Image 1 (cartoon, rainbow, N blue to C red):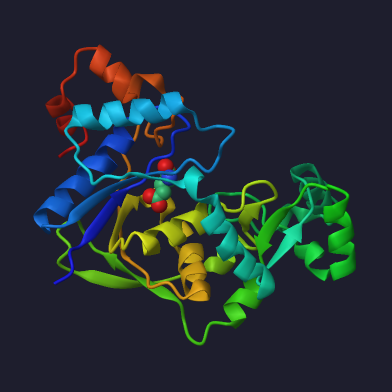
Image 2: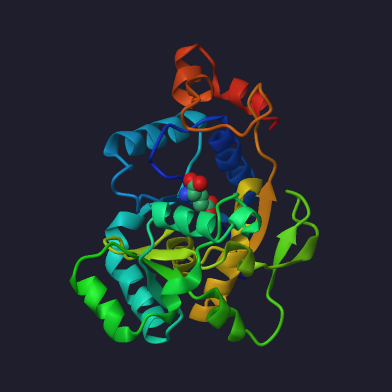
Amino acid sequence: MTLLTFRFAPSPNGELHLGHAYSALLNQQMAARAGGRLLLRIEDIDIARCTPEFEAGIFHDLKWLGLGWEEPVRRQSEHFAEYRAVLDRLIVEELVYPGFMSRGEIRAFIAETGGRDWPRDPDGVPLYPSLDKALSMKERKRRIAENIPFAWRLDVEAATARMSGALSWFEFTDETMTATHTVEAKPQAWGDVIVARRDIPTSYHLAVVVDDALQGVSHVVRGQDLYAATGVQRLLQELLGLSPPRYFHHRLILGPDGRKLSKSLKDTGLAALRHAGMSPQDVRRLVGL
Ligand code: GLU
């Protein structure tokens, strides 16, 4: 029998907070109950915002919490060549195109077209106007050669046209993993999402599906805030021929104001709680474990 494989995949672009603690501890608990493996993956593709100090803080906080994981830890910034190879496949298959519009240009275009009803993605960001899709190969090459900034965007229309049937994923109904239900994936909700940057040959979505498959992750346990993103990730898995894991999107730990915790909320940071005298048991209790 193959072992079930879980992973906790934080980004070292800030300090871990109670929400991360819940996610990490829940992964640990579910892996232990299933007699499975727990991996830790450092998602540091955003080399401008991720720092070695934040990474060291993550290791420190997780050890303090009593988390154990398999070595070696995969650090995404060390695998750009692998993501580049996958991106190249998507380019050759014409499933991505270079999008040259800056945020300001997108905003201006939408305003000009009277865009009150312009569709927005599940995070509330206006969808990318897919004008650049119509650019000729020659024009694309000219702009790239002239160093005009761009990002590789998924041609979601072309991509979904490749799918033979409905796209879905298996979602556990709770952490006991006794039942799953099928969720319909809606990648179109995100429009032509960024799959890679000009200088970084991947995005969160691409790296996460490549790594989950490469590391044999069978169970993705992560926050409810990534539920809708799973739609895009399922589409990428299909395009790349990667077999999908099962998912459990857990409840989010909210702040006293009822809002999602953010990395700038210092008072719920694990380091701050530790310095205030809290124990790992206190943290468990706070997150309801
Ligand atoms: N690196 C992502 C984050 O810190 C999590 C990715 C995932 O679990 O799929 O929000």
